[in-house]
Each structure stands twice: as C-alpha cells, then as structure tokens.
Length: 118
Image 1 (cartoon, rainbow, N blue to C red):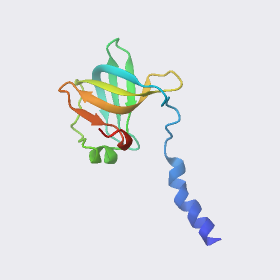
Image 2: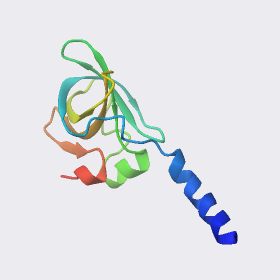
Image 3: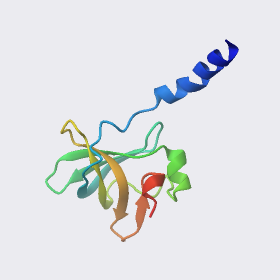
C-alpha cells in the first residue's frame, strides 16, 4: 500500500506538465519576423513575434532551465530582434507553434529543446 501511495505522489508532477499533443509534429512551419516580447518564465519560455504579414505568433519552447543547458541566456533574444524560427504549428489553427530552433539575424542558431540540438 505504501508503494502505491509513493508512486501516486511521485507521478503527480508528471501529470501537471503541458503536453505537446496540441502541436502538429508531422509538419514544420518557418516564421520570420520581429520579436515583440520574450517571456522567460516557467513552465515554458515563449517568444512573441510579428511575422512579415504583421500577424502575431506565440512560439513556445522549453523551460528556461533547459534552454540554459542548450546555450541560451535571458539575453539571447530581445524585443526588436529579427529572427526566423521553425517548428510545429498548433493543431487548432491558432498562431501558436512549438519551436524546433531559432535563427538570429546574425545567423546563429539556438535549439529550443534537447531533441532538436544542432
């Protein structure tokens, strides 16, 4: 009985994590635009960009802690920077995507989660 309770307690944080099922991982979208805002917070860092048509997109990545391990800093991207990002679009058609990587105007590339490390 104690083992079952311990298992339930340790599994609870896993159930609270956001799923990637809302994104269509079978296809990739590339967006180029200007950063409106960088949101460096848990559970997922986000970059809000205005694409070339003026549409505003939210690009979701991993947690700041994971991004630091991938080479990011809170200063890696800033409002006003021009970037290209590639990732899986939302399955619902909203302007939301799960980032694979970000390419800065300088040409440097940053992966957005470990499986996509370049």
